[in-house]
Image (tube, rainbow, N blue to C red; front, side, top):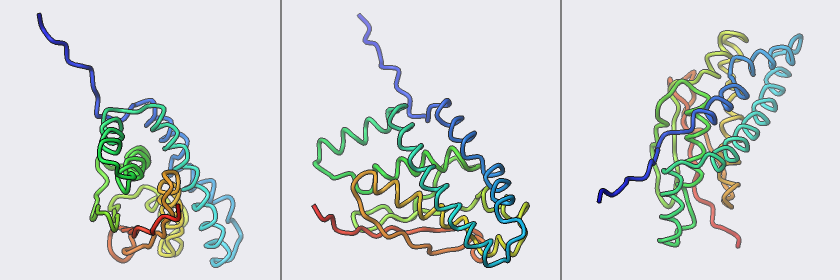
Length: 193
C-alpha cells in the first residue's frame, strides 16, 4: 500500500494574484491620481496624492487579507499551526504574510526583502516599485521626489498589522529617490489587552 502525499501548494493562488493586480494596478492608480490633481499647485497636489495613496494602501491591505484568508495556502496553514502550537500572538509573521501577498501581487518582485523580523521590530524594503516608476513617468520627477506613494505603504503596513490586533507606528527609513529603495520599520508597540 502506497501512502498518498497531500497536494500542498506554497504558491500564492493565481486567481487571488490576478484580482489584486487588476484592482490595484499601479499604472491605472497613478492615471486616476493624475486626473485628480490636474491644475493643482505642487503642494496641493502632494497633499491630495498622499491622501489618495493612504486610502489606496488601506484598501490594498484589506483586500489582500480577505483574499489571503479565502485562498489560504500551505504557508498560511503552517503559520497558523505554529501560532497555535507555540502560543505566539502572531507578531510579526501573520501580518508579514499579507504584506507579502500585497507586494508580490502588485509589484514586479518575486520576494519581499525582510531586513529584520524579530519580536521587537519588523523591517522590510522595496527596491523595485512600479508605483514609484509610474509616478515618475506620469507625474514627473518633482512629484516622484515628494514620494506621496510612501503614504500608501505606511497605511498598508499599519492596516495589515491592525487586522491582527497590533497597534503599530510605521516609520520610513529609506526613500526611493535618495536611496534607490524604500524601507519601512514597524517597532512593536505593547498590546493594550
